[in-house]
Image (cartoon, rainbow, N blue to C red; front, side, top):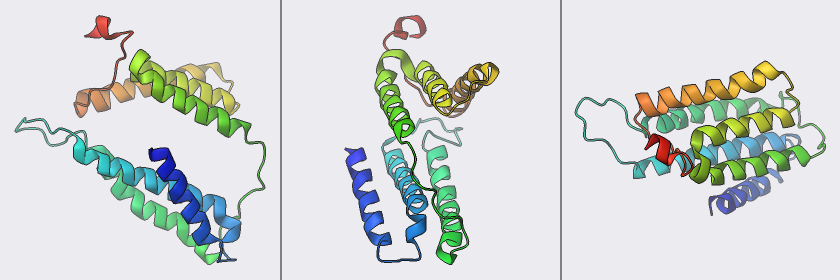
Length: 177
């Protein structure tokens, strides 16, 4: 359902840009900023449904980081928009082959669906490898190091520091409880 809302927001953004001839060359960049802002806003509102641990000494919760990212996202979005409004930014490039976008989007959907079965860690590692491959990264060290580094970072940052339980998947539930 959120993808439908995102599509509506992007369509409204496109309609808002069309009357301004000065902004037309930046339509793609502006819509990317609108999409990022919308997703940040969505995650911000989702954080209000997070359960807060009842520990007196906990300074952060699972909602802390998404909210912080959203607060940082506001000025970054505005700062990225200013050069476009002034006409000082490079215009959008001509559209090319969109098959990569489709593969990345399909991989993202499969990754999200596979959380339930193979867990967040394995799913996100596979997603990173596929996306890196699609974007022509063929360095074997990078194809291994980046997903492994991301999994280690995710585990320590989210699971250990913020106490966010990331899905381990039904396949591994018996091993890790």
